Amino acid sequence: MIKPVAFAVLLATAGATFAAVDNASLPEPVRVPAGNSIKLETVGTGEITYECREKKDAAGAFEWAFVAPVATLWDMQQKNIGKYYGGPTWESADGSKVTGKQVAVAPASAGNIPLQLVKADPAMGSGAMTGVTYIQRLETKGGVAPSAACNAAAKGSKQQVAYQAKYVFYKQN
Image (cartoon, rainbow, N blue to C red; front, side, top):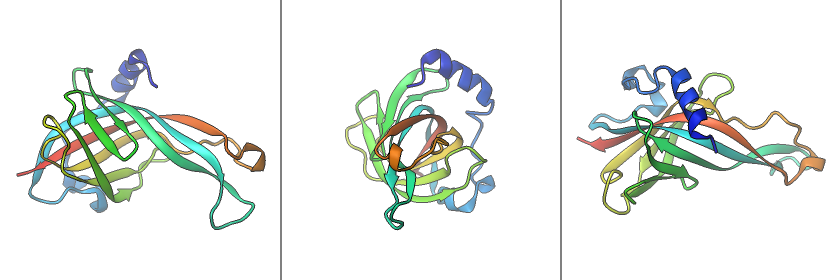
């Protein structure tokens, strides 16, 4: 996990981490539908775990396969306000949480995981995640599959890759 000092460095180097979201300027697949407005903006810092596995459709070939993410969610004041983990699940420090289904992805710059749009399921619990309709993953940094060799000798090995992303939570107007 990225330590708080490392987070401060990431946030400082991110520059526009909390810049206003202009959906019209985003790739069309990850735009939030009209009728929704921003409820909450966070920065997630953490790691994505990959495992070296044999490809399903190519016997004898191997690839780094996504296993799960884990990240801490921070607000604009660099306060820990929750966590993000496999599911996908975003859980607020107040105990409310939301899961969802990926609607679309769009390429990010080289070396960074894709941008993403998730349609939220109804929140569990009452709090910050109540009423969330969509979640965008924007301004991604890192998180792509390892560059280390993935072959028969490495089969089953796991690697964690640091990443950062802006998570924007929307509510229906």
